[in-house]
Image 1 (tube, rainbow, N blue to C red):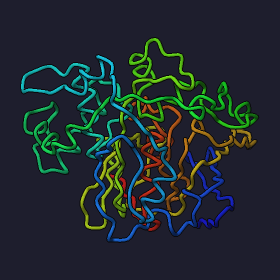
Image 2: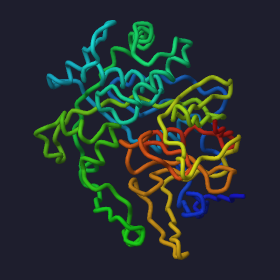
Image 3: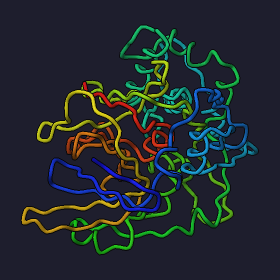
Length: 372
């Protein structure tokens, strides 16, 4: 149904016949057959980052794609703030409260085990609970609604991983602060007149780069001016899953996207929004048909007039479109990561932009997507 060639434009429907999507480039600027088709010999990559996060080793196609899709983050742990030290040293014991220090470390540990908890904010909430339950399922633990000792021990039994710094220092570069920003208007017609659906501020761009909530970024850096050369406190995102994904399960009940490797093992999970009452997601099993990095989005008004909204992180489908064999449906990013699992979608599967990019780098061209 879909035909996609290098450097060509791909077109797919989205939003149950109310809007259309148009992509400009293939992930990692490779031909469509290469993205995510890593060989079976892909080595396990440790999420321990040792001063450089999201810079993966290896020459598989998945690793190559991920290194091109995700920004490399070089950080230090010298002269950390008092807040950062408290988070990094935090531990949890049965019966104790999950304060913001422990909450931040818990979210980090879940993320590093490839069970995404959404934007890191240090608070126990819906997405953290879902990530914990996905981790429990993947490791054969009792699934609970609250953190227990068995789960904490399993999260921290790898001493090298558990000792990795959660909050780190990062020196802002010219590229970090010289980003194009814009004010995003409300109407599709006005959005279509923009050059791009850019970030609205530098803090928004930085929060997304470091997988943080924007409020937490500002709380960690109350006196920051966010200028080049300034050192700020950020979250260390670790490294994403590098194992090829051949099967996806979009679970409407848990609002979680489960990613399985070729051996049937769960390799990653992501918080998601799956459809709504008004525009439900499809049922059954479908296949991946097209994969686009930095898509356009074409909105069709009730009178039939079309508005082509340009690419960018604040595009209605974010930075990624993974179109399915079921016309008008796909997996895509989001302009508002804080609302993942907290808002409705037009029948599609919505992820944070960073989770969508991480999935784009490893999902196979013929992967199946099951809705349940």
